[in-house]
Length: 253
Image (cartoon, rainbow, N blue to C red):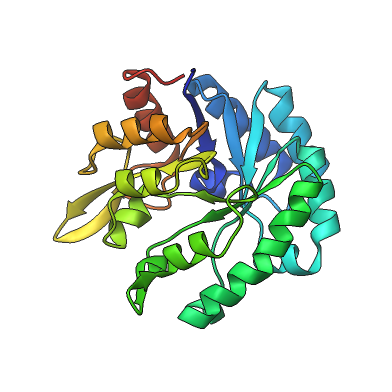
């Protein structure tokens, strides 16, 4: 199976402020070799224009990040937007803080179990993106485990983020295996240490165990590999280029 690399557009959020900037950014990403993108940090632009620009460069959109309120208060329009984008994975970028408790995770799981099922009925899948706070334990179980155990594995997927798993004290490869069949798209970012502090790094430039992570991804059936770098010392486009170059040497396209 071809392992396809995509760019998480949040990485280049400072270069998508106008349609003209967005067009140049997508062209640069295409020239690096990427074939897909995740639509994020773009909702100041018309959805049909986002779709048109991305597709005009021969790229596809495989995942979004939408806000909590759009899922809970604007689901019909969200579904329509995803059909316009040609995108089947509707992602939530972060869990509102009011859910950061044992009862909160259970309440969120119940709410989004129903939302995920409705998305499924409309040809889409829901995908939850983790940070580090989901690894807090409540009576022996992490927030991630509560979400796993209280949602439908067929409709409620996870966009596992390798950096944030590590930052939460988890093992990225172990969590990929634990979520076997529930990760269609994954976020790849590395972690290094600068002045005794954890810092996001380009893939294979930091300290994560990438051989095990890549094997776990193959075992778990991951389809889309999305490169993201929220912040760091390296310029955003150069960060995407370095990660692509490193991964292309180990069989990615």
